[in-house]
Length: 215
Ligand SMILES: [Zn+2]
Picture (tube, helix red, strand yellow):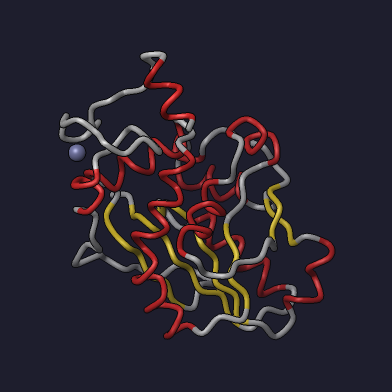
């Protein structure tokens, strides 16, 4: 509906931002179905140990159409693409869930101010698209510039104490296997600090699933 209003007003980009062909999808209006259909898991992916994380899985490299989808979701707030991306990673995520067998699936949340700004939490929205049942476990308590602009040491410092478990969920963590979902893996410092925190309050193991890996 919004897409239709935008295209009638001439504001919608009616060409795919990757291949430049026309788009029939009125729902989002940025990427054509054939470019979206090209998004597949990347092989091989280099896995380096992330401290405190038992094991993790990455769907693809942060490049090409996959990177474009994530940028559109995060920087242009294209909510319908988040659901579409969820549908795309669903099968790959489910394979990992069979291995990890988590009791709780949750996501790296946005700070409330950024959530207010964007109108939706992209990680939560992508997860909705996968159809996997996820629970809101964490809150981001520190607002900072995107971590990508800092060096490794500074990221670690900033990310420490940036998240905590929601008060009403603290009792749920004890003895549980928790899977953390995040869109982009850069150095792993966010996942590592969150995992350390979850283990420190009694989680049995923490797993991580990321849609894309940078670098
Ligand atoms: Zn296209």
